[in-house]
Length: 336
Length: 209
Ligand code: HEM
Image (cartoon, rainbow over all chains, first blue to last red; front, top):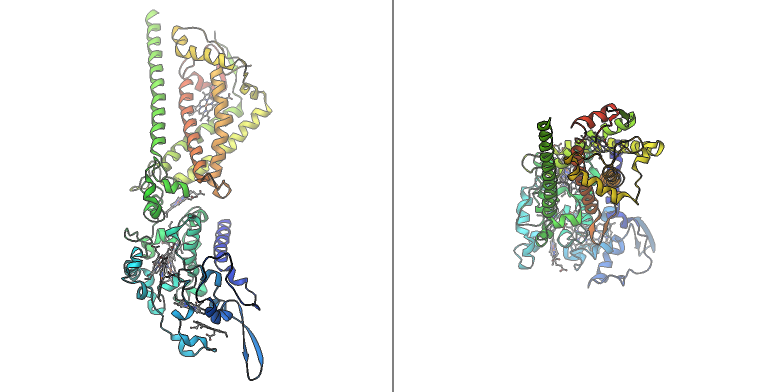
């Protein structure tokens, strides 16, 4: 048990590390930040954004008191640090900070009222917009309102809590590496569910020990690397790519065969986007085969039929052989 | 009349009993896992139990396999598995002819059982295939599935796990077929039960085989 605990802790640490490590690496920048040559996206607003990122771009910021001529250095709270490289790869990379935040933020210290700043929700911009129709924001919104997290809205839960405004990037839709997508999607949940600091902002419940709660699942590490939390915790919905209705824990998937069987639910969730075109070859679940191996769900019709054939042949030969032996025994006893 | 040969020392019988029992468990649990049913959660045995049992039986059979190999390295039983490549094809044919019609015409055994040579060529050949090619591949691919992190990631865009698994299932299938044939050929003693008794007592009844 301890070993298992160790492995899963390492996993969770690792996941957290991958997605936060960059923010630790920053040193105060003396020279001006410029987009790297390697990135093909250069924001129109990158200079303007530097007005904010000179402080929010790393763990150290400074400000000077002009009348006294002194400069003071402070640490920026890690929660308020925004990683430029990740921001400029995110879905909203083309935005300037003040598209979402008040212009008032250009003043420092920021005014206290700004703390109550009202911020747009996804649906405010994306709702009923032809350009984003394929995402079905309205359907997602409706699902979210039935999800178990929705009761936390009054405490400040919003779509932004899972879709970090400064980092969120679509993944499964154009995933080239399913494992990375799984790690990314799970890190969204683990952001609160393996970080009690965040969790307690929203709930008075005691810490939920994920490893212990999922003790019933063997090979936890393998599972958490190969399926997403939402596979078990949401209800699949054919109309959207990523189901958003997180159900109460009692409705979570627990039976192995939901996944480990021919009509695996994974075909309707994790492997959904890729599965459509790839079903033709004899492999029943072509996609799944290329990405991972799910006992019970991977079956090949040709191999199945072929092995049945061999099996039948062998039994046939044995049958014939037995038949002749019986004839021989009979003729022997007839002779004597 | 018949005299008895002591062909199967204790360690072989111990290995064989373990091997046979575990192999049967592995076949049943393996099939059960592969065909788990969506509605009922089991085909023969409940999925999670099948996994546990399969892993357990695999561990035991691996240990007993190591015992088998070690035994054959250390004792002269190993010699029984040394194929004489110059003669084998011809001998295989002779033995095959005997099984297909010679035995029905009451021809004598072409390769009577002796202490120096307890297997006929067909047995020898098939046992070597099963024990020195089939079993190692089965065990190695099984370990690969148990610890996916050590399995090769992939070749030509096909998942390494998939290849490992296809290897595992194929070997499992061939060895299952082997077992069925093996069980049948073990009824070809002087009486259908003679050879089985031999594997239990250690003594082979040498008049016919
Ligand atoms: C219920 C299952 C099995 C039964 C009843 C059975 C029975 C026997 C018997 C009676 C013999 C002695 C035959 C002879 O060579 O004269 C024998 C030998 C042998 N069996 Fe099996 N067997 C079973 C399963 C297996 C399995 C699963 C394997 C391997 C995967 C296997 C491998 C062998 C081998 C290699 C020998 C030769 C032993 C030696 O070194 O002397 N058997 N078996």
